[in-house]
Image (cartoon, rainbow, N blue to C red; front, side, top):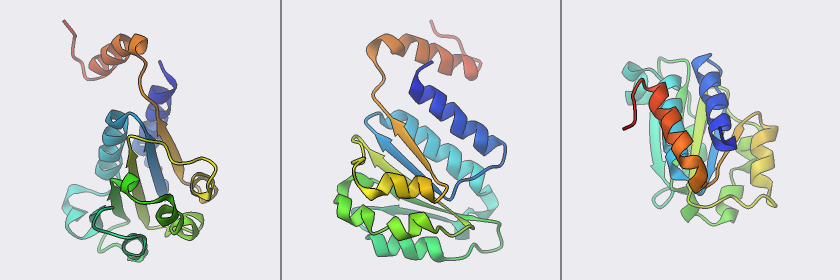
Length: 166
């Protein structure tokens, strides 16, 4: 298995064990694993009947860092936690993402923030990645799957879903 699938399995195993991180920064060139992981986190962190009040989806084109932080600082309604998802974060300048660094370092314990930064990597020289990790969050890097790894990856995914390929 590749490093991406190992990291993916590790996060999914944590979720299924009931362990949630305050921040998940999902970034990289391969969007497939990020989408799957975001869906897994959303489904595990908040029950279906609690989603009306405790599940917020923001798009970076329409929301700024202050709106994201405000959504994260709210308390959940009649639930243990809330989920805030920021999609398409790659459209922000890195300076806008860095405005969330104080929140990353001291996140709200009742909020799970998922940041989807697709089709490119967050600049590792900036404070963003380190501050997510320092605040007990998870940074998931989804590199492009190499062509020679693709058959084994697809077979493994099919096997986990009790399906058989051709």
